[in-house]
Image (cartoon, rainbow, N blue to C red; front, side, top):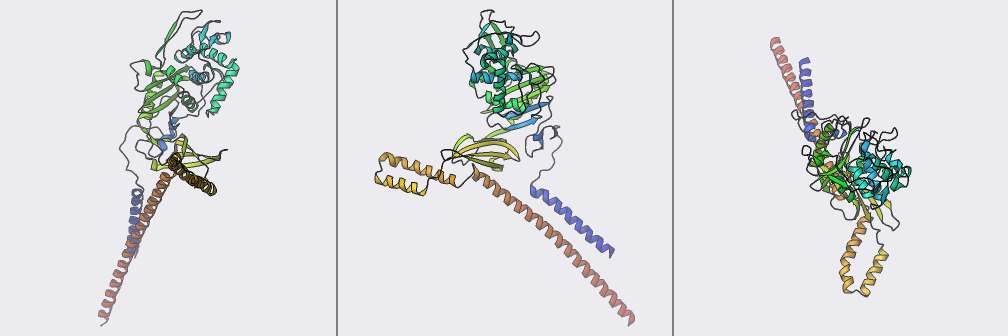
Amino acid sequence: MRNKKTRAAVSLVLGLLLLFALVPAAWGEEEAVSAGPSYADPSVIPSNGTEGWPLLEDTYSDYFCVMDADTGTILAEKGMDTETPPASLTKILTCLVALKYGDLDQQVTMSETGVEYAISGSSNLYTQVGEVFTLRDMLYGMMLKSANDIATEIGVAVGGTLEHFLEMMNEEAEALGCTHSYFANACGMPNEAHHSSAHDLALISKAALENDLFREIVHTKVYTIPATNMNEERTFQNHHKFLVTEEYAYDGIIGGKTGYTDLAGSCLATYVERDGRTVIVIALHCMGMDNCLNDTRRLCNYGLGEFRSVTIPNVTDEIVSGGTLTLPNDASFEQCEVSSSSAAQEDGSELVTGTYYWHGREVGTMVTKKLPAVSSAAEAAQESAAEGGETEEGAAASPDKDAASAGAKGSANGENPGSGAVRSSQDGSLVRTIFIIGGILLAIILILLIVSIHLRRERNRRRRRNQRAEDERRRKQD
């Protein structure tokens, strides 16, 4: 009896093992691959914990952010919201605010406020009080030579006072969505209150890259400021080695900004583009610029090589902004999910914001404008007016009117941007779930059937043994 129970238990265990073997196969899990590069733990680089997202090894830089400049998608990051001194990467925001509010042809006279930052041993143009530059020349001197005296005087010229310019800088950063920054000077010199983060600097860079002159400035290899009223002409070279050296030359480099202080370490902002895509890489707090450059090269290769742009399909409403997603090369739009919100407008239209996710990671947004639905009475009035005196021009315009009406009806139905494709993805997920559950139930049924057959055979054997024993007992009695 004990042996029979043991055999039944063994059969049950074997059946359960079969079930557990079937479940991963049903979910489509891949077999473990052979050992390769040692990728960073997800606690260090969070994107390494997202299924299907391209993996990254750790970096020398303590903090970094890789952003798609077109969609704003964060492709990878490491401590990107950690507050840290940004050193001369501060000048990216100084340049952005100056381009936005300054007059490029303005004649700027150096004041004591600016010249105070012409400190020996720091990066500057050794300007003098009373020396005159154009604001345009000063922007090149600030971004290529990283001159602290020039950056500070730009603030005085554009803001009226340095204090007011710093208020403008912090307001601009806040408007761009920066939540871990405070700028206490215009150049990045050490200050206990002065800090930013890799993410914030990527947001600032994204806005700056929308300005053509900013792109032109950071892409310039060598610039000459003409002779001033107090000095001869000055010629200087861009500090970013991707742009000006053979050793670090990078295909697709737009430009960027270097930075260093003892507290900030080596810092580097880099902008690259290839095949219609632009990627921003911010690397901060690194031991040595060569290490920072090597980190940046790997991160640029990652951002440009592992991802692609995907246009959101089946959009019938007017696109106000967005409409493109950044996905891993082997991912598809059908795998995305969308979260939508809407806001009514004064003209009766509706702005619908769709935020798209791939395996839980945000990959892009789209804002569309839904026109107000035309009432039945209004439609009847329009049809009556058309029948009363339709011209050739009106007849030609009729198809467009019908298309607009159809679009308005679609809007009235409350459809989300790109919702058809997303619903298709949801339907596919439901089918896969049903298939998986059915497979599990089938496995359970097979296990129960095996156990039942086994028990029935045991009962038959026991019955036959009992019968033989009974027949033997009767023979002995006879």
